[in-house]
Structure formats: structure tokens, C-alpha cells
Image: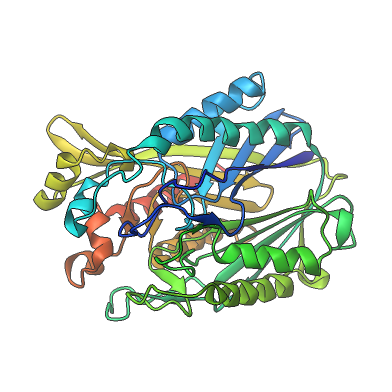
Length: 430
């Protein structure tokens, strides 16, 4: 039987902390629009005592090193019950929460902006505390474990558009919206009976724009506010957004290079997303994934690290010159690599593919196709920026022929194809 636990911790930084994303901002955080959080979903197989934690953070990204540290702390907090290797970190890619790493000197020199305008205070003193707070969400979820009804549905959404307008090599948008419902008892989707709602789609959290200096989730804040009201959720029911492969996907009303926007623009995106999620959660459309009376449950985690060789001399110079190990850059026997951790989580028929970096939508679509081709009963979804920050993952033609700024942080034209190939192999272990 499956049990599920939930926990939420606040990770809002102090004012004056540099915000992640939009590195040409002129000021640090000036206020708080809404609290940012880390939300943990902890799954337990009562037959095998297997625990898998997925922690969704309102951050721009999470490096593998930070994720490893959080996992180690969480394992100690749970007295070894939840193993570090079974804890997956995911960032929703909001551009309005704290910056947690250094190493972006190459960009600062380009825009002629002083690096570390807070003198590195938050990275030095705030991030160690942040790790402990996020790790504590696993402990909270462990105390919250209980049998749970899990239902799911897939539909489509039009909230995102492809921001690479002049790139014929990359015109796809992953429009799939995946919603997962966690209930105390089968039946009513309202009030105390709803433990959590998880929804997954591909759409950059950039609706607030570069002139925003308030800490925020961005548009998911507005989506969650509407869902909370519509389903009359109590304070302890969680609303969790999981970011899909949105490397080239912006909100429909966010035109690239026109980044000065008002907060009502984020509210529009949040409202439209909420309407789509509500539509996906009609009882008659939901498929039963797990029930407390089920005796045959499956909970698995498959992990694999792959290496993609970096052959472009310009990229080697950049990755080496700025020591971008936070992105997985490695050198061995005079060869240069991007090291990429990949994960597959199976919860009965739900399969979650976890990718570091920001893949373009075509790769999310391709990964889900591989999962469905292997077993058409599987319910696949893809999360980007999980346990790593590997830069942009773009198609070959976009890399070689129609370069945009995303290409500058793409280590290789082959990364996405190697990831899809690796997942095809990993699926057989599920």
C-alpha cells in the first residue's frame, strides 16, 4: 500500500537579497509580494518501506551540490528513514526569489554591472540556513504520512507560447497539463478531503518581469489563490506547481525583450492556468492511480548519470574560464563534459522524468513519448531543473543555425538527444 505525506516550509529571504534571473536588475529585493516556499511530497511503500521525496522549491534553480547537501541533512533529520539518494529537488524557475549561487561573472562583465551587489552575504550566510529549512520539509512530510487516494488527468493548456519567434528549428510547445489529486477518501473534491493538488505544465515564471523587485512565486501565486478558493481548501492542503520543459516557453502575454510588465499581467496568466487546472479536475475525467485498499502498489526510483562531451572550443573556454562546475562541467583526461543526473520516479502508473537544466519543449514531448511507447498505461510527466542546473538544452539546428541567447548556456547540441536516449534505457528498469 502507498502512503503519502506533505509538508510546506517558508523560504522567503530577507529584504536586500539579490533576486535570481534577470541578472541586469539594478536593485535587490525591495519587498514581499507573496511568500516563497518549499513543498515536500513524500511517498512510502508500506510493503518495502521504500521512501521517495520530491521537494518543489520556489527558486530559480538548484545545483546538484546544494541538492546533495539538502538530501544529506534530511537523511539525518529523519534518522536514516528517508535516504539522501531518494530525495529529489525541483525548482519552479521563478525569477523573483533569491539567487543562491555565484559564478555568473561572464554575464556581469557583459552588462557592466557590479557582481555581488550584496557582497555575497546571502550566498555565504543565507544559503546554509536555506538548506536546513528545505531539508526540514522531509521531516515534516514523514510525520504526515497516511493512506491516500490518488487520481490524475491530462488535458491541454494555452497559457504558454514559444518565445523563439524567428527560429524555425524550435517551434514546438508542450501544451500538456497534468493534474494529480490527493484525497483522504474517494469522492468529494472539496475542503478537508483534499490533501494536495499537483499540476505540471511548461511555462516560464517570468510574468512579473525584470522591473519587479518583490519576492514572489510569480504567476503560480495567483493560480494557487484561485484553486484554494474554488476547492475551499484548508490551510494545510498543499497546492504544488511543477515546471515542465519550458526552456523556450514564456507566458502568452510576455513578449521576449519587452520585459517591463505590471503585476496584473501575472494575474492574467495565473487566472487562465487556474481555469485549466479546474477543468482538468472534474471527477468524471479523473483516473484512479492509487487507493488505500490496493494491495499491489509500485514505488520505484531509477537514477542515472550521463556525460555529454563538450567539443566547441568557445564553450570549453567559457565553461573552463568561469569554472562553471555548478552547471555540471567536468574535465577528465583532457576531455570536457557536462555531467547530467537523471531520475525516473514511478508511483503506480504515474512516471515522473526529472531533468536538470532547461530543455526546450521538443525534448519534454519526446521523453513522454518514449514512456508511453514503452507502456501505454503509464501517465508521464516531465520536470525540468531537478537536482541540477545544466543550462539550456536546445535542438541541433537551433544550436548551429538559428542561435539565440539560450545557445550561450547550451554546452552541446547533442545534450537533449542523449537525455532522451538515456531515459529510453532507464524506462526498462521500471
